Image (cartoon, rainbow, N blue to C red; front, side):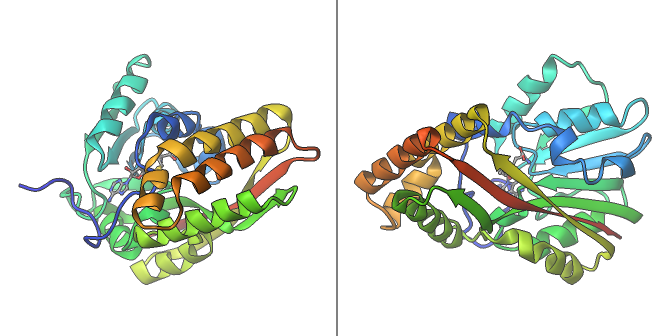
Length: 275
Ligand SMILES: C[S@@+](CC[C@H](N)C(=O)[O-])C[C@H]1O[C@@H](n2cnc3c(N)ncnc32)[C@H](O)[C@@H]1O
């Protein structure tokens, strides 16, 4: 028996699960990340959160679906599922479960979920349509799938800094080499169509980092991730950047936090489709 199923054999999750990555994901809340679909999620729905990572959004979704709804969070990383279970344990929710599983081939019964949700997952998959087709298989007729993906190409950064332009270049190249797509946001609607979903609702929202707390949080996490996460390891392994260049990028992020007028925003694309 092999591990959880991936897309192409080249597919690799760009960020990996270094502590700096998981900590950045663990601050996410459904009130922001799932705001576009929360009004459509109601008790007693059964929801699948695929690529749930450390599960903070998943916990919120389970609370949202009380008293009779339930949530299953899956991720193909056993390590992050363990962290999700730990994060959720203080809430003692009896309508929430986590499993290590791949969205490409879940093995769940057809027509068994009312809703599915994913936040920042399809962009890392080499076969996003295949994943969406599997989600569609496990949804009941009339069930909904809701996805939110960033589009790094729709980002605005100030002040200009060659080191941060290099960061974007490194990110695009590593994501592509890993089988993912850093411009996923603009393609999600098409992927839903190809997977056979109908009644598509498409919205956008933005992440904006402009005040002192936001700048520090965004800049400092990337200063660390570009040195220590899988993004850094792969950039060096693929010959996309040297360790010295990554160190310069890291310092670029730290300088940006202190720069006069510092600002960063990018677009999130949200799609809800019906089976
Ligand atoms: C950027 S993280 C997002 C985590 C979470 N949804 C959030 O927004 O906080 C992407 C997650 O997708 C998971 N993932 C990648 N490929 C997967 C697959 N084939 N099946 C299930 N999860 C997968 C990764 O392990 C990672 O935890």
